[in-house]
Length: 255
Image (cartoon, rainbow, N blue to C red):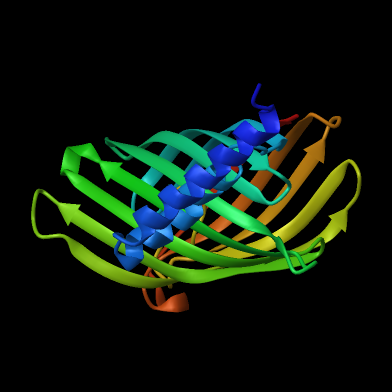
C-alpha cells in the first residue's frame, strides 16, 4: 500500500511542476498576481494550517461640502495561513447623494519577514457607480512596516477608470498610510492615522484623511472599532476646497 506521506509528496512535486509550466508562459504582470494570490495555496496545498480567522461588519457615515452626505455598509473577512500568509476580501454597498455605489476588495499579504514587522501585499479594489456607468479598478502593491506603536504603508496605486463606455483612463498614484498608537492595552487601543487609501478606496495624493482610531476588546473573540475622520477631497494638498467629516464603527469576531 502506498503511504499517505508518499502521496502527499507526489502531489507536491506535481504542483511545483505545474507552477513552473504556468510561469514560463505568463507575462510579468500575470506572474505578479499569481505569486501573491495563488502560489501560496499551491505550495501549502498538502500541509497548510489555518492559524487565524476574522470576520466583521462596519457602518460608515460621511458629510462633506462636495456630496453633502454618504452612507456605507461593509463586510470583511480574512484567513491567515501558517502565520505567514493572509488573504482578505470584502464588499461594501452605499449611497452617495442620490446615487448607489458598489465597492469590493481582494487583498493578499505575506509576513512578517526577517524577524521584523515587515509585510508585502497586493490589493485589488473595485469602485462602481452604476448610475454614471463609472467603473474604477485599482491595483495596489504595498510594503508595510506594522509595529505595535507605529507603522507605515507605502506603494504605487495603479488605477484604471472608465465613464459611460469611454476610453479607459490610467493614473499612477502614490498611496500612503501611517499610524501612531498612544494607548495599547489588553482591552483598549487608541491612536491617530493619516492616509489617502483604505480597504475600499484609493484616493488621489491630495485627498488624504486624518483620523482618531480606537479598538475595544470585549474578550478574545469580540471587539469593536470606532474611527472619527477629518477628510479632504482635492488634488493639491491643503489647497483643496472640499472638506468633510466621517464616522466609522463596526464589530470584529476573531477565532
